[in-house]
Structure formats: structure tokens, C-alpha cells
Length: 357
Ligand code: NAD
Image 1 (cartoon, protein in one colour):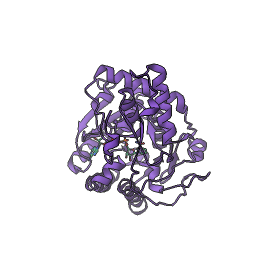
Image 2: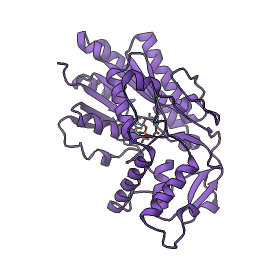
Image 3: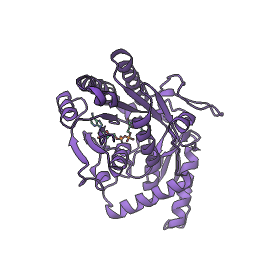
Image 4: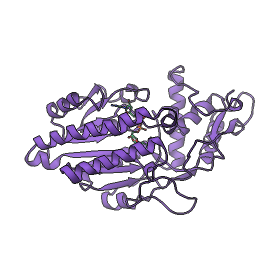
């Protein structure tokens, strides 16, 4: 039998990384979680596995070559799953420097150290090693409102500082394979939602504000479309890509669940109304405020996941309505447990008219 795998997960205290750590440790894989604990990282998402003998947390930066080299060697790591990144488009518009630093330069340092480690291996260990780079469908840019979708052949055309930095990191990863032979796999996923997401992104921001009866900012006319995937479905897909993906290949991952932003916000309002009415008796949809659009806002993202479904036998299992209802329940319970922990206002570009409760 194959020996137990040991995976270095970078960014494992983030929204998706923590779901990956929980999923892998539950399945018996040993996980070393390397995370800097920026504003986006939280160890509370890892409480369930914190005491497991299969799990170790190390606070540190992916750009710290000495630290990463030591972890790879002493833990005999045979796969890196690289999720550490700056991930919020609005922050990349307000302050792009850290996106260049972490997403591009940080990935470069990690590749260099992974290459040295891979070169030091031999036999079956060298054969088995993988560097899995986790990326976004936003690298492909903007789709029109038609039936077109992104797939593994889609050309790169990033629009924001965030997506441009992720595109650059994708190119670096492929170059380290073509030029130096590092065995890499890549995946580009659509928008994720689920528990433990920092409440600056659309779904958790809307849930936490709507629950509290605060205004609900929606960019532009709210017609922008995103293809939503539950984070636990994504974690399963990532394990499939890491363990069974073909070296040098890319898999685009999505849940076949396209919804406009305004439709998502309205669904959240209605689900919350059904749980508890607002004190003033109004429907929560009355809290929606259209705000000045994000500069360069892509209209539509959509994924054709045929390849990952066919080649790796993965399929999204959590339907959007059920996944959203479960996510709402999680945020309501989390808020009840720690009412002061969630910042309710974190939106830049919010006009004064939309600022009040
Ligand atoms: P997140 O912002 O929730 O978490 C990022 C984590 O990385 C945080 O825990 C942070 O502390 C850590 N980190 C940041 N800089 C670091 C550094 N220099 N060294 C070590 N750790 C560092 O992000 P997320 O939403 O979980 O996304 C994870 C990855 O998946 C990112 O690469 C992102 O581009 C990609 N992705 C996200 C989505 C999505 O919808 N959220 C969709 C597709 C792809």
C-alpha cells in the first residue's frame, strides 16, 4: 500500500484553505498548514482538527524560504497545495502592492523551494511529489451574457489587480514545470461560498448585514453573474486534482450554478425573512441599495466543468439553495456565539446614502 500522504497547505487558515485542511485531515491525510494569519486568516475554522495527530499549524510567510525548506524536509512533504493569497478584488483596487508581493513574488519563492525539495527526492517519493496551484476563473476575464463558459482552453485576460496577480502566478507555475520539470497541477475555480468566509465578500457580507437589519450594498445594477460553488465541494475537487490530476494539466472547477448578484441578495433576504421578520415588519429586500459600480467590474463568469467531471469523477453535490440556507444557518449561529467578532461594515466605494442602517 502507498504510504500516507503529507501535504503542505499554504493559506490553510483562510476560507478555502481551512475547508481543505478539515477535509484532508478527516480523510486521514497528514496536513501541515502554513499561514501568515493576515486579516483573512482565522484559526477558529480549524478548531475541529486542531488536536488531531495528523495536523500541524505553523504561522509563517510563504516567502520565508528557510522556513518552507525546513518544513518540506522535516515533514517529508509529498504535495504542496498552494492557496495562500490576497483574495479580495476591492482591496486589490485600493492597495495592489501586497497582491504583487504575496500572489506573485510569494509564489515565486515557494516554487523555488519546492523545486529544490523535489530535486532532493528520489524513486517513488520523487515520482509522487506534486505542486498544486489553486487559482481562480477570474484570470480569464469577462464573459458576455450568453451561453459561453470558461474551460481549460480559455485565453487569459484578467481585469483587476487581483486577477492579474493570480494570472501571473499561474504562468510562473507552468513555467517551473516546462523549464525545470517541477511536477505541477493547476485548478481554476469559480466563486466559492460557505461557512467561515470573511464577511467582506458578497454572500457573508449580505447575510451578516441583512440579519442585523443594515443596508445591503449591491454594485451597479446587480446584474453581474457569478457561478457559485460550495467550499466543501471545492475541497473535494481539490483533493481529486492533487491526488489524481495529470502532471502539467489544468482543471477548471465550477458548480453549474450561475446567479446574478441581485438574485443572490434577494434569495438571502427571503431566507432570512422566513426565519425571523425585521422589527419594523418590512421585508429585507427593502434594505437593498445600489451603489457605484466597482471599476472594471467583470459582467459574468461561468465554468464548463466537463473535464474535471469526466476525467476525475468529481461532481458538485451541494445545490445552491440548500448550500445557501446552510451557510445562513452557520452565520446566524456564529454571530449568536460571538456577536462582537464580525465586522458588519467593510465595504469601500459605499456612498453616504447607503451607509446607514
Ligand atoms: P482567503 O483570503 O480567505 O485566505 C487566504 C489565506 O492566505 C489567509 O488565511 C491568509 O492569512 C493567508 N496568507 C495571505 N498571505 C500569506 C502569505 N504571504 N504567507 C502565508 N499565508 C498567507 O482566501 P480564499 O478565499 O480562501 O482563497 C484561497 C485561494 O483560492 C486563493 O489563492 C484564491 O485566489 C483562490 N480562489 C478563491 C476563490 C473564492 O471564491 N474565494 C475562488 C477561486 C479561487
